[in-house]
Every structure is written in C-alpha cells, then in structure tokens.
Length: 489
Image (cartoon, rainbow, N blue to C red; front, side, top):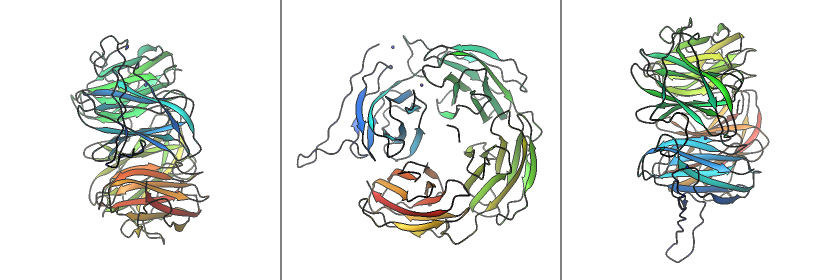
C-alpha cells in the first residue's frame, strides 16, 4: 500500500460543566473542544499533548460554506478523522498529507452544519505534543491571498481523446495550488494526471457543489498524481494540483484525456460470479497504461470477493455500472501484490470491476476471479457472533482463530448512544471493517490503529442501531489467534 493571509481569528474554548459543577473531559465526543475556523492560515494554533491511547475531539460550526483546511503541526505522527456531528457519519480521514507525518484534511463544509474532528496518534506508541488549526482555503473568499489560480478563476482545459493530448506546463512554489476546469463533451472515464519529477497531490471536485469526488498522491509514474473518474456530459469539474507538502516546489505537466483502450467501460468483459473460490479464472495481460473492465451481475445479495492472482502488482476499483459511482478500491490486500475487494452486493445489480497495474509502468500477466463468500467455519454476515458492548475496557474478550482467507463477523447493538471502541488484541496482524448491518454501508476501517499490528476502530454509535464488525487477517495469507472486544469509551 502507498502511502494543504488578514486578521487572526481567536480560538474559543468551550468548557462544559455538569449540574454538580464538575468539568467534563475535553477529549470526548460528547464534550469536544470548540473552535472558530480562521479566515487564513494565520489562525491561532491550539497546542495539545497526546498520551498513549489518547484522542482529542474538536468541533466547529462554519459561518459560511467553502473549503476548510484542518491540519496538525509538530513532530509526532498524527491521524485525523472528520465526522458529521449529528449523524456520526465519517466524512474524511487522513494520515500523512500534511507536513512530515502530520495529518491534513481539506473538506467543503456547509454553513451552520456542525462537524467533529478527531485527532490521535497513528499507533498507541505515538505520544507527544502537536498543534491543531483550521482555516478557510482557496474555494472560499480568497481576497488578499496568493493562490496561483483561484477556484473562481480556474484554467480551462479541453479534455483530449487519448494520452497524446497536449500538456499544460505549470510551476509550483511553496504553498501554491493550481486549479483546472474540465467540462466533458461525452460520458465516460477521464484520466487526469501530472507528469514530471515534482511530487504532486491532486483533488477532483464538482465545480458547482464543491463536493470532493476523488484525490490521489502517487498513482502516476514516479511521484505523480493520477485520477480516473467516470464523468458526465457537460458537468463542470475542477481539478486542484499542489505539491505533496507545503515545502514542495518545481515544475510539472498537466493533462486530461478520455479512455481509448481496448477494454472500455461501455464494453466490459462479462464474468459469471462463482459460488466459491474454485470458480474459473480469466487470464489477462497488463500492458503499460492499459486497463481491463469486468461486468459482474450477482445472482443473489451477499458478500462478494473480487481478486487478482499472479506476480503482477495490480490495482482494482469497483463501480456501480449504471451510475458510475466508485464503491471501493484496493491495492495489495490479496496475496503478494495482488488486489482484493470484498463488498456487500445486491442481487441483479450491475457492477464493474476495473483492473490496472499499480503504475503506468506496470506490465505482466494476472488472473481475475469473483465469487460469493461461503461458510468455512467462521461466522458469516448473515449469522454474525453476537457481542455485548462493555461499559469500559474491562469487558471480556472473545478469542478467535483466523485461517487463510477466513473472516469473523460480530454483531454490535449499543444500548445507548456514544463512542464505541472495537479492537483486536494478540500477535496476529488483523484488519477490521465496521458496517451498518441493515444497509451494508461501510462506516469505517482500520489496520494498525491498536497495539502492535492490531486493528482498532472508534465510532460514534447510535442506540439500538445494528452494526457489524468484520475481522480478517491483513492479507489472505495471515493466520493465527486473536481476541475481539468492544466497549464504550
């Protein structure tokens, strides 16, 4: 797996008292630190200290809509999550998009909507001091700022018919950003990429709503950014390009072009989903820049596994074939460098799996297969193990054993609303996903957020709502014992 100037705005800390006069902890979901979003990056920084297992919660209510940049500063490795404060929905998350090992999220907020930001160390061993700040970015009022090409005045770029389209050459200075306007003349996949030796980061937005549609760091050649997205005729899109860090400077080329490869979105390879992993595979060959599209129509609702096998480094994306919505993506969750996606599908709905090499330089042979999950002795989605959420971390854990390709499912039904910690312990490298048990929506996922190589998810759950936690080995080859527990924070 491969891993952004005016008066200062004061920071207001809201300290809440209970009826008896005791002060509540400030790093809880229910009692976050309140702050005001700054108009620029000169906003006051809030200095905090992270202890082992500690998390800090911040809340803000934007006075206007627009792009807000939330970031940490300092020398410790931080991880950040952004939530809708009312619904608890995870909106965005980040590890190292800021300077050094700092977290940085850019998100288009809505006026008067309340948001919560959670900051923690990447692992339980990440402790120390850090600074936190949040301020409006380039898509808001940019008066007095020095952005290269503001959101309201982007560079208009005509999408080419193939990769030979003419590039625009740009130069990034420290902290600068470039904005490009794309208006496709037809529906289809559009490739957007940078070229050159500068380490770039790219984001794709709906130009009218400001919604972030996709982002990328190093999917292109070398350290270039590359986004592939299903675009719609005459819809306006904005691409923002910046250096990976504020310190990144240098020249780069920008281009965008339509899909012209042999296996097109509109002519995918039809593949019959198997009943188990013994389904026949389709053997394919990856050439530089080439992609394969597979059409999948499940015969029933359930858990679908899509994977590649072989010696090539593959990357896979799963789409809704009718809307073009990206549902999931993966790089190395399979064996070796193979891609593997697991997704809850609906009967007779049309899905497209797109497979490419990890980079445009990747070539070689691979095999593709897709099959429904079968019962191999573990608790399945339809029959998960019931786990009663504890009131604290002293809750009794459930011991389990993972075999190759196996998964465990745990049903969690909180008796009250609040933040719930779901985690594994032990020496096995685990990966966890949290779902809405009724809709199948993926709510959160984690690899090594717990101690050592254990998975750990912190999520604000609603009383009486049904959640499923799925635990597997980090890759299909991982086996061993682990323990699972869930408790209120």
